[in-house]
Amino acid sequence: MKAFEKNIRKVEPYVPGEQPQHKVIKLNTNENPYPPAPGVKEALMNMDVDRMRLYPDPTAGNLVHTLAEYYGVKDEQVFVGVGSDDVLAMCFLTFFNSDKPILFPDITYSFYKVWAELYRIPYECPALDDNFRIVKEDYYKENGGVIFPNPNAPTSIYEDLDFIEDILKHNQDVIVIVDEAYIDFAGKSAIELIDKYENLIVVQTFSKARSMAGMRIGYAISNPILIKYLNDAKYSFNSYTMNQTSLICGVEAVKDKAYFEEQVQKIVDTREWAKEELRALGFEFPDSKSNFIFVTHPKFSAKKLFEALKKANIYVRFLGGARIQEYLRISVGTREEMEMLISFLKEYMKENKGEK
Image (cartoon, rainbow, N blue to C red; front, top):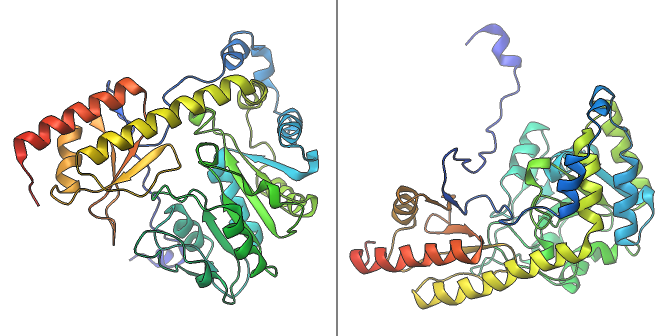
């Protein structure tokens, strides 16, 4: 080792899902299979290219205001960033600075552990129960902050607001972050609790339900004091985080509520159909309330299924790791894509007769 290497911060990075460059049935990264709202395309076609020579609005004022109106909150209660990953990373940096460990589940979004290690934040990971549910009592103990997704990823399980509120009631002296990347496919948002709990931050994204993963837009909603702390940290790090194109297109995506609700319902309907088909093939899975299904089969190896699907140009996600090495995460695509997936599985299972 070189002398200077001992002072280099080393972390094990997050591993994103594959982004194949050839034509495949892509069910591996929970993207929306439908295009963004029509207004987004119109905005792109009519964009004033001359604006690209100017820095974007550092406050992201139009987008912040549009989101605030949509959710019925004040502008000063909204923070935006380059995807929810950027927002969450800024939350870790800003709010998790205690000597006590932060808490998040052992099976959850794996970026949490990366950020904790990057920022040298102590952490503990209470285990999900045998049904992959969060055990809320595990979050009653003293800690330096709490974060978890709802619905959880990769398990797809949604907890209702009473459950969320119970965790909040037992953690009023620390920041609690509810990561709602998949909330639009599930149930009520914890945004309803913002006015009741001053330590709550809710984070959402345009990447899933709004079909804009490629634009990288995420946001947090909380009380004005916590949002100010986030902005102070952001302006000390990078004032111009949101680009002109994302700011303009983000506004248009929020405006078209009817289109948004229609696409979400199509995904939910396809998800429920796919759950029935997968169950009929012998797959087992938690009751998904997201835009993906977390499946296992008692007779078939998850890794071998993953490899066979990939060979057939059907990409799903094999995460591996403790407790979930026999699970695949399948994003919900179009009805046609899901029918092709089911058709392949039927044929594969008929030919292989179980291989564990």
